[in-house]
Length: 147
Image (cartoon, rainbow, N blue to C red; front, side):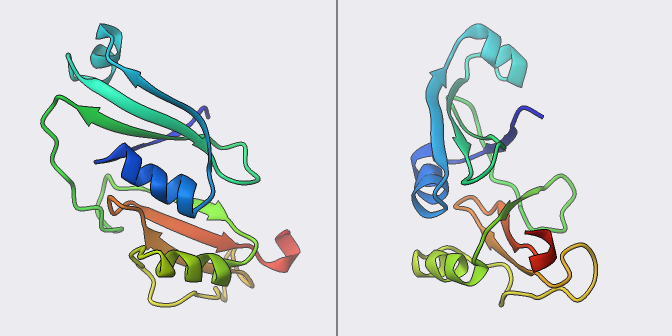
């Protein structure tokens, strides 16, 4: 896998969340307006404002892309809707990260941090929040046996 892409309404607002609050490292930030870019994404004439980021202690790359110059319609990102997605990030202290996110005004999905009693996360802690566009972000503190 090369990267996971997330379409955003406002790149700066999303960077404030992923870089500023979650602590992702910005690897690149660029604007693509070449004809090939519009052809690839199916929007000739589009201007793509994008950033590649890396979560802490990870080799995963997240690409945030803001489409400009084309009509855009927000989608219902509710977790159960087909076609939606979520990303999951491993954290050392889910309580501390969750508290910092709530203090920063991030919208929660889960009312509380959950301690799964079955499955691969059994013995760990999990919570869902939303990024600025409603994309679900899962924070996972693995069980001690998996750290």
